[in-house]
Length: 203
Image 1 (cartoon, helix red, strand yellow):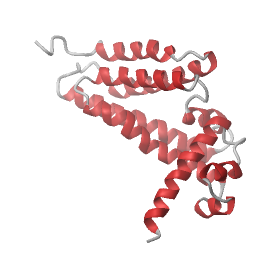
Image 2 (cartoon, helix red, strand yellow):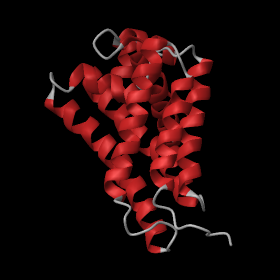
Image 3 (cartoon, one colour):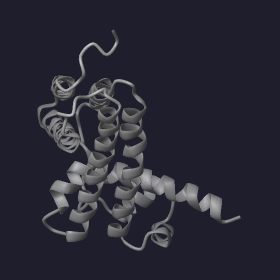
């Protein structure tokens, strides 16, 4: 009886913790604020996560699964991977436009704030970006094996470049308050893949 509600509560905690840490940063966010956002006492929050560090690392793991479902799986399902990549940047443009280009990328923020201060955070953020890039590379490699892309496509380098362009666009959009940066950068990401596309696929 206790298990199902526990999973639901933990997911709510992770979502609220991400929101608070996203807006304030890891160091400035407090467990008290997170507990309040969750509608629970701080003691109950500590029952689920023994420290703010444990909670933040759990949020990063949660984001790995979330990014896989929202950014990697659509790429694998799309018959035109370059379009899926362009869509990813367009969706980011809409999201950033909706929040006034504030906060930036949660994982990118944590990477900048904590990678030189805490080795565990650096490794977990590295795992996040590594899995995101590896998932995209696997999708691109399958498209290459099917004959959609030429053998000239370096799937790993292309995936890493797409992640780098996305994170760089997040930082620029945040500091310049310009969500259209995602659309401009997304065009470059798309063209990077298109140059390796086998011509006249449709005819």
